[in-house]
Length: 68
Image 1 (cartoon, rainbow, N blue to C red):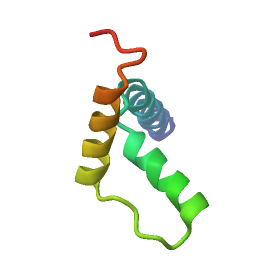
Image 2: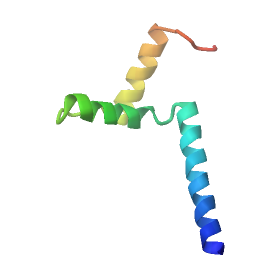
Image 3: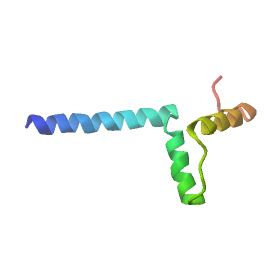
């Protein structure tokens, strides 16, 4: 019984972490990689650093829907 409860808690925590990453945008790079694989196949994707630089540059030049 205890093992099932611990497994349920662990699964619930994983869902909470995934939700929080989605809300905060932390999963953006993972979404980009999935999209890149689907659309561009074997082409080399941007590195994490390149991705975040590109994302912040685009957001800075197009400040739509930002709170600040």
